[in-house]
Length: 249
Image (cartoon, rainbow, N blue to C red):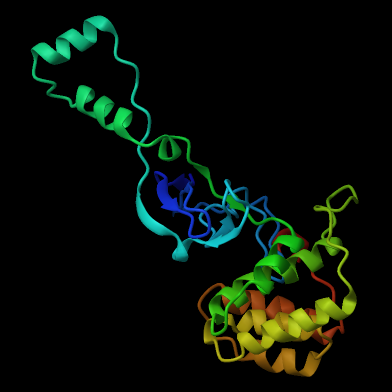
């Protein structure tokens, strides 16, 4: 079972409105979801807890790390009936029902009406966020460029009956190549991204370099298996994103 945390309330740094965000507290990977060579996962929870999104009030791209005054989001308490209200008063409100009601009533309307942060879904979203990035934000750039890479590859993800899994972004090949090369540069010194580096090199047609990197992936019971499958694709001169699920090998 996949579990999601209670929402946290944030204040948008651009317009001072409020939005909520939840994160995943437990993940369960289902076997029937494709495992793609570029690392994209198509589980339903993919966008939950993302570090960036759009403020639901002003539509500006907001990094959660930059948002102000994080605090637990309060939920509207259940309505208390006349008899229950009298009972809580007579018993000293031992369960705090009347207290919670007073706290809720006192909250500003803009906090009560806070909506969930809007996930970035499309390549256009990621390009807009990239254009607004400040200098020296490599981790944020990696996050956005990785998802832009996935968006470019979406046109190759075929469903079981032939149609595209997602509507692809009509990016120019030159844009896609620049994005992959920049992403490769950003993860060049990251040991944890060795498989991703090999996949980027393979899709860029740099097969010998891809094989050399993938062969050196340390064994951990998972990454070396992915590396071996991608290495096989590189040795065959294949540059297309491929599904690595066990049933396809």
